[in-house]
Length: 166
Image (cartoon, rainbow, N blue to C red; front, side, top):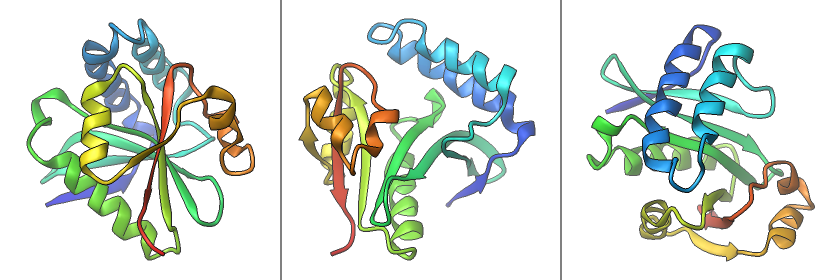
């Protein structure tokens, strides 16, 4: 069973390592973006704009998630990254279930995330987990949740949403 715990400043090197690992998969569509984020974790530490949590399998760190509230009903998942040796083993599903359980109990009704339009593996995964593409146009994505998504928008991304409570 996975544990998800709040990241602390001492986790910066691990966060950087996960980004460098993700770069192998994403560099063809986002050249240098993950190396830049890896350096940012080392140089600047944890972000202020969203919360980072470490994913642990037994006592081993295997990845991280980032989340922030968009509004009282919607949680924006800024990141879910798992080290490559742990991918394809069901951890992504377990992580989403943990996020849903934790935040549904706090009154969250929807999960939202951005996924790169060329990251077909990620799009397909989220579709299997009942996320729906709700917007593809940049301006409309930025307008989502009373324009709160504008600060997180990335070019060439799709907005996907899942309703977790009615």
